[in-house]
Length: 519
Ligand code: 3UK
Image 1 (tube, rainbow, N blue to C red):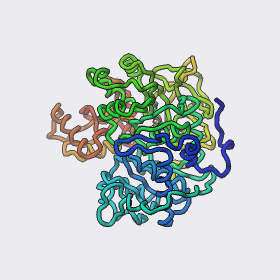
Image 2 (cartoon, protein in one colour; image 1 turned 90 degrees about the vertical axis):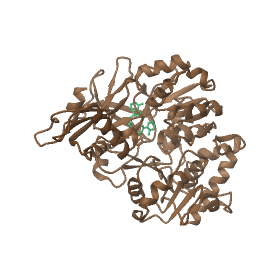
Image 3 (cartoon, rainbow, N blue to C red; image 1 turned 180 degrees about the vertical axis):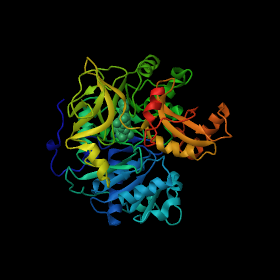
C-alpha cells in the first residue's frame, strides 16, 4: 500500500495508459454504462482514437487546449481521452456558467476547438463573437449551421492511433475554479497527477477494486467527478456509470443507482441531505448494490453522516480535495472514520496548520491549512499575483481553516477568504451582492455564509434599504426571487436580514467577518 511517486512513472508517460492498460486484460469488460450507450474498454479505446485522429486532422498539436463543454455522456469520456492521447490539454468547462464566463475561458485557454453537447450550445453561441481563437465547434447531437456534428466528425477516422510521447510533467487538463473577485482561475494538471491521485487516494485510501462500479452525482467537468468517476476506477479496471441528468434531483441519482447498481457513490453533502429528505427512501429505491459512499466539495456535518448510516447502513468517506490538488488530500478511510471530520493525511501528502506568520499552531488550535504533495498544480494560468499567494514553493495555501484534534483527525473550520461552498460549488459573495444591488429597493448589501437546518452553508444577505421601502417578509421573498432570476438558483440568498447600516472599516470596506459573527 505504499505511495506512488512521480519518479516511479516513466519520464515519457501519457495518462491515456489508464484507459489502455485495460485492453490487455479486460478489453471486453464494460468500461462505462449510460442511458445512451454501454461501452467496453475496447469500444471506448477505438472511439478515443477516432477523436484523437479527428483532432490531429484539425492541426491540434501537443500542448494546445481543446475546450470540452459536455454533460456526463460517453462522448465526454471519448473526447477527454482523445485530447490526452494526442498530448492536447483538455479544458473541461463547468456546465452551469453564462456565455460571458465561457467567453473568458475560451480566451484564456485559447482553444481553437470546442466540443460541446447540443443541450449546452445555447450557453455559448451568444458570446461566439468574443471567442477570437475559436475556429470550430463540434456538437454532440444535432449540429446547427456553422457547426460540425461529432458523429460526422469522427466517422471515417481510423480506430488506431499511437499515443503522443508526452512527458509525465506535461499538462493534460485545465479546470477553472472561482475566486472571490474577478476572473476564474485556470488550473493545469500534468499527466502524472492522474495516476498519482488514482493510486494514492483511489486505490490506497478508498480501496477501489476491479469489481467496483462507481457512480458520481458530481459531474465529470469537476475534478471530483473526473477523478472519482473516470480516472480512478479505470486505473484499477473498474467500470463507471454516467448520468446526464441534473445531480441535484435526488430521484435522478437514486434512479441511476437502482438501474445500474453501482458499488460506490460520490456526492456532495447537500446531495446526501436531499436524498435523506425523501419519504420512504428505502422502499422507493434499491440501494443494495452500494458498498461505500464518498462525500467532498464542502464539509459533511456529522448529523448527516449518522442519518445516512441509519437510513442506508452505509458509511460515508468524507475527504477534502481541491481543483488545485486535482483531488482529495485529507481523508477518512473505510476502517477509520470520524464523522464530522475530514479524517487524516495519507501517504503521498503532508499537511501543516500554521498561523498567519507561517508558524505551526499547537494541536487543537485553528490555523491555515498548507498542503504538500506531487499532484498539486504549479500556478494559475495568466494570474501571477494570485499564483504567488497560493503556490508557496512545495506548499500550497489551501485557503481553508483547520484544527487537528487530540486523536489526529482534521476538522474544517471555514475559509480564510470570503468564498462559500454551496452544495459543493463555489459561490462568490460579490456575485450575489451585485445581483442584489440591482434591485430598486437596495442601497447596500453584503453576503456571508450561514448554516441551514442540516448544518450546510447557504448564502445569507444583509441589506440596507432606500427610503420609501420598508423591511417585510414580502420584500425578503422578492429579493430572493430577484436573485434567483439574475444568477444561478443555488447562489441566491436563502435569508435576507434588513439592517440600518453595514459594518465597515475606516476606509469604507464592508467587514463580512463581522456579519459572520452575528450568525
Ligand atoms: C472545500 C471541503 C470541507 C474546501 C474537490 C474533492 O471541492 C473540490 O474542489 P474545489 O476546487 O474546492 C476546494 C475547496 O472546497 N472542500 C472540498 N471538500 C471539502 N471542505 N470538507 C470537505 N470534504 O474549501 C476546499 O479548499 O471546487 C473535492 C475532489 C476534487 C475536488 N476538486
